[in-house]
Amino acid sequence: MSAAATLAPISVATTTPAIEVRNLRRTFHVGGGLLGQDREVVAVDDVSFALPTGGVLGVVGESGCGKSTLARVILGLLPPTAGEVLVEGQRLSALDRRARARLIQPVFQDPFSSLNPRRRIRDIVAMPLVAQGDVPARQVRDRVQEMLARVGLSAEQGERFPAQLSGGQRQRVAIARALVLRPRIVICDEPTSALDVSVQAQILNLLAELRRELDLTLLFISHNLAVVEHVASEVAVMYLGRVVERREAEALFREPRHPYTKALLASVLTPEPGLGVPDVGLGDTLPDPANIPPGCRFHPRCPVAEPRCATETPKSVDGAECLLLEGSGRP
Ligand SMILES: Nc1ncnc2c1ncn2[C@@H]1O[C@H](COP(=O)(O)OP(=O)(O)OP(=O)(O)O)[C@@H](O)[C@H]1O
Image 1 (tube, helix red, strand yellow):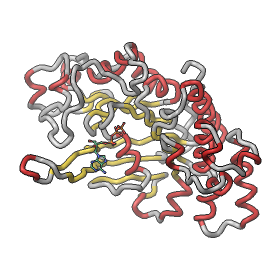
Image 2 (image 1 turned 90 degrees about the horizontal axis):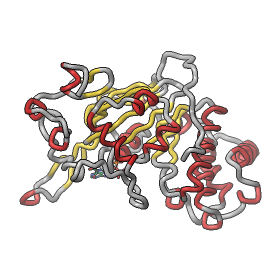
Image 3 (image 1 turned 90 degrees about the vertical axis):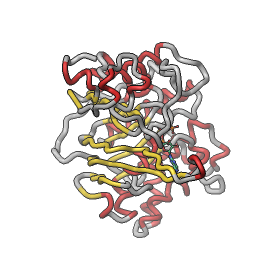
Image 4 (image 1 turned 180 degrees about the horizontal axis):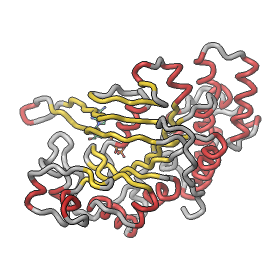
């Protein structure tokens, strides 16, 4: 991943954050509990942050910690159970679908399943423009050609169908479609995870270039910390629905504060090839999100937990939620 471009944070021209989430919570009701009763899965639990314009927030954590749910709520694809999302200072819930699409767009993991196999590439890229309902056909054609060129695809490739392109080319199509409305914010949910390793760096470089050229703000979800280290200006570490550490990327990777972040970073040093998800070296899998431990939710797996961690709820100290940081400053 060393070939991937670095996204240096750019200066912030405005004080209104590109994305602000306030006390966001999203739960799901699922069956299958003891005696078949309803269980409440807490996927996102009281998450708040503000991402400045031009920033790149990397969101990391084990599978099931709530990354995709957070992305879907910020995109307006799922309503929050509580809390709110502001995009460039406007309440997401007050914007209609077309206005949202002009501000914020997704790039998902698997371009094959997100591209309609029966449509030509140029029509797929045109869709968001056409859905606006008021863009003249000539402008649609020109903008599609411009976007295809910008992501490195030819006009001839625009005439093809998704199955006639490689995985990397399909992800370029997904990026062109996300950018054709010139949104200010792009939410990338594991945008390189379905790609061959050799292609991943090309797509990361492309996203880095486009972010600089178009002054985009990115929320970048990945289980791959090496990817996040290259792209993010800030990192949020999620554990069982909560952001347990959020700090400037360089500082977090150099000196992680939360014991969970330390475990995640240590897992990068002992990768399991082909597994696709980090083994965080904590022995067992993520606890049940329908039965979140009391006190610090990480305490049952924490290598440095003390008895009080089972009962007291940690507050954030310098960007990390750990009771042991509240006293000494070091866990
Ligand atoms: N539609 C749903 N119905 C019920 N539970 C859900 C739903 N979507 C997500 N969940 C649950 O919410 C929790 C968070 O899931 P989410 O997909 O957001 O995590 P994630 O960190 O993105 O995981 P992954 O990296 O595997 O995609 C999980 O326990 C998941 O099973």
